[in-house]
Image (spheres, helix red, strand yellow):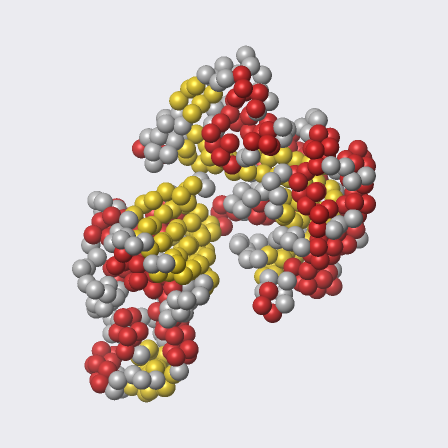
Length: 497
């Protein structure tokens, strides 16, 4: 493919519209890909710009699109340029205002204005610790929102004319087919900002007013945390360490999407990965690279499912296996069979509570006696936003509010509520913390599972002496770290029982 860009390269807009792309720069000439149907007169202009004789290579539509993407995707995000642009008065808004008033923003000499805007969007998202960037075209404008601490915040609403060039450029950077707008596509952009390695997962989706794009920002520093950095209370942390010290059995992490399950699993793997074990993972997708661990990406189109891959890696003599998610009976059976051979398995299940995970596995078809013998622990978790220390307001709680979280009236004199200020972007919150409940399968619980006890019975036995999610959250409400409104936003009321 082409060498690095120079000042005499073809602009992206010219290459795309005229069907020409630089394939290779050589000492005496340039190998130029020519799409079928390209007008001969455009070759004269290409020869003038490139300043070297041309060696032409015909390309069909698919090969041309691939070559175009490969060549122009090399221009990634520049943290230095983005930081300089955002230091100017107005920040992102000034970048939008500086864009030229043309019908197609990519039809100028180059597409630098759009690249600068994308630089700015991603840089500010990283700077504000956003997990996702949503770009969605509407009838009259383009909505750009960041997901910060689990909640979407609108940051820009520029003209809808920006949609096509902005989304096209992002698709080029993520090596997606820019001509295909009828089906969803997924790609990745790898970049470095301020010494931090950021992996951007890009997903496109056709919508009524054009394609929308979601970019998930994956920062390795935020994922590879030690267990003690997850924010568990001391009792839960010691119980989790005790579970991980056991030589076999299945440990499950459960909770809704975005509740931090993957981060918890990675932290547990870091404890188990002591250099003396063969640790293997099955993930869909692989979110972060883990040193010293074999990670396998699922590929359902070619039959690389969780169950099929799990059977395959068992022949590679693993000591510890992490399965991204137990979605069906086949995967569950293979995971439990492996754990029954005397080795630990980590995985996730999508349920709202720890006791609900046990019921889900029974509903899938796992026999109660297998569950009782093999399951070691279930962690249920949520991420709640932390109140901003600069603006939170005291509030006198009602007895009903305190009782909901297992707090004793009289012992807690005040709780806190959000207000909003400049420091927290007027949201009232800054950062997040984990709320956990943990079921460890002891002899009493093992007997209940074997006898097919109800979810309520399991819940009552498991949390007779330990915190439920609501009780765990109550500790943070009492200490002023979060609010009742925030806990109720991420936890169901029935979990308060």
